Length: 255
Image (cartoon, rainbow, N blue to C red; front, side, top):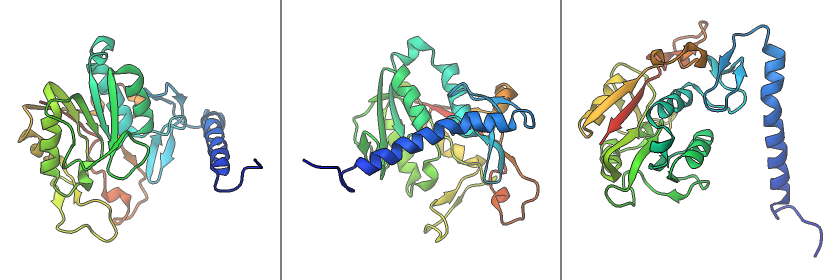
């Protein structure tokens, strides 16, 4: 027996401890420095109240405590609206490409929880969303935020999500609103990870499969949560301002 060496996982564990410690300091320090000069908002996920951080060219987008953005805050509010404690306790969840803060929420509040991803190792199961390895009618809720823009055969994936949902089950399937009309690429562009740039017409693909699609908007909730996507004004036409031209929208599809 001797001292732990590099490669034993010791250094990696220590690095993670330091990382979590520094992240824990982020919110109070940011709040202290900016409390008087910036607008204050509330995060429905971690209950933080104070100024939000900018994210790239998006202003007031990121909660400094949990790190989540506009779309996750909107999703949490809609989840709270639909699922009271009794209904959540009866709901089996499949979470694809899980956000860490929402993963904690699902695990704590819902009946059962399975996380999945094609590549990530910090999930319960790795699989391709085009071939979900579960029987028909296995889940009451499927949550896949900003996933389908990466999936080559997205229509097959949508049908798979519908297949594993029980009657009356819900699928939360938000995608980025980049254009009025969706652009599908034959091949993945060299400078992009996505296979399509989704637009507001993308929700029609859900309507072809699901019985009902209800779209939630930021205007349905209090402005204190800052759910809209606001961009800096001094951006050129080739910048990120060419994206997110439409509101932050959350489609909820019913099986």
